[in-house]
Image (tube, helix red, strand yellow):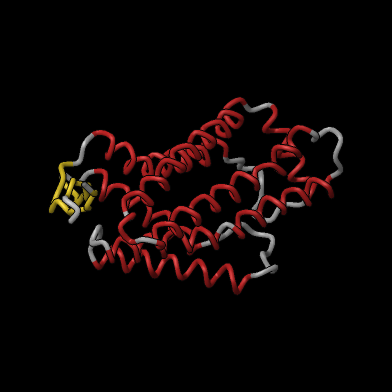
Length: 234
């Protein structure tokens, strides 16, 4: 006997499916909540080293700001689950599904890695000069800008794979292809010229697309699924 993969036209979405799919929306809500809670109104868009150092000192006296960091870490956990779910959902796309997984893991690694300089400056804030704090702050910003590349690849590959496997309709899939491609182009064109601001308008397209994808799959009643069945071998 051997295993043959056959396709069921539809499958009722169960609780585990919803957990995986809606983890994307959970990440979106938690991450943006963390930003809102931890936002420092006294920090300008392009701060000096002394202004960054003053912001760290205010963070030390702000329990809500410190809690925001913990919330963001929880958001990362939801993000990991969502990336795994998306890669599993489009697994019939073959190597494209592997690209989705690799790009998603790389994006998470870059994002978490970029937090290290920020945490280091917070811990050593009493021993660092404003110039050193500014350097670490820009390392964090550079990590965010570098993350545009794997983020774009993740969305582009997921959209193409979902279109090929008919997990998404043309409109949402092509929206992902455009958003992912735009972020890849921005990352490539920007290169080392990341600037001193943290603005990345095209990244908002990625966040909106991922949120829409999460809700689309998480709130659906049915989706396609494959299963393995025994078949005789001649």
